[in-house]
Image (tube, rainbow, N blue to C red; front, side, top):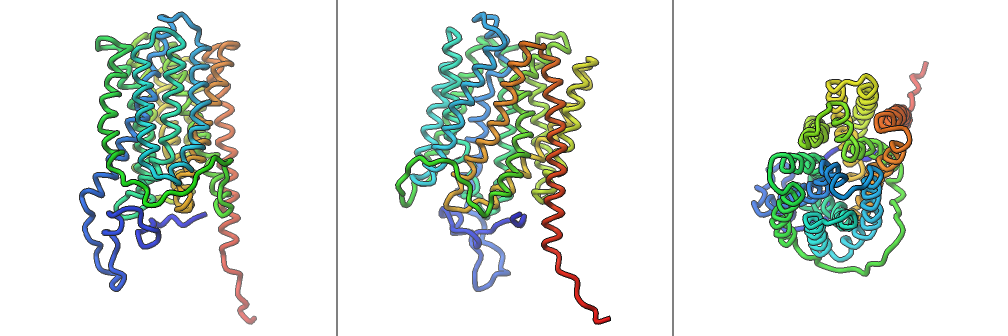
Length: 436
């Protein structure tokens, strides 16, 4: 497992002017580092804002699907199919855009992603039938796939002191912040403001304007290399880290996908309320707890974060299943809090480990492959639960999913513990002969 110590600018090739200006004096390593230029800090936080806003936009439809069902007359299965179309284009977009941005630079790829996101929001705002919803989600999937890896890599390159751990924290908090902000913003506007199917997406288009300005501020690539599509391949030195951290993050985002697609309806069923804001707030509560857990977990070892997060995730899933069986809305809220904390710790640990192990020359490529695992976690289980719900009902389908995912979390925890013990044993010095 890679060291958990922050990587300084001395240990990596500087990517931009701010990083070069922040390097300590090599003749006097103990001298304090020069102050970070304000422009370097601005670019870092503007890039984080771009990630936040893109993820906010892709999750605006979450509390609105029940309204679309009534307006356009389709079944809950169609919601699952719309989500499946989103994931189907997101994954190849991730695999193509990461290596492309490593070859030709971040700016062009990210500008295209922001433009696609704005177009997706526009199609949602003008939607006049079910086909429009499919088209809008395809555009959003292409946008997020193109942006996820390059934005995460750009945050690492732009972090003013070269601290990859801090860059991973900001990336994960921005990601879950956008996942949570989207349903809350859309639910609030749809419930209490006019034009519920239009206003949320108009607000998103406005928020994307400064995001485009932030992307334009990124420096173009100093040297371009030839790019050609290739199959995903993880450097041999980090495959074990990628496999364990990817599996933990897959489980964490399987829970996120369930909350984003089906839990708003689950909340409405348990509470008997049709308030759109209530369903969005349940999703936001889970992701708020995730973000707070990440902030509190900052500085901890990546493996320790995963070992703490997975059992909490399992406990939250068990309570989620019990909440539907009783039924109990308060227990659902407790499950949401515990599951959110577990999700945040597991995700932060996984991304921190992969971010630290990724080689500089293939940074966006590796991170895009990592996001493929994450979005498979978001998509595949939620799609499966959606199909199952048409046979056994929503409450029962969620209970089956929760039980299976909780068991996998515990299995993964035991696997990580065994791996940790083997690593510790291998690193321990052999016993010395005392001469007795």
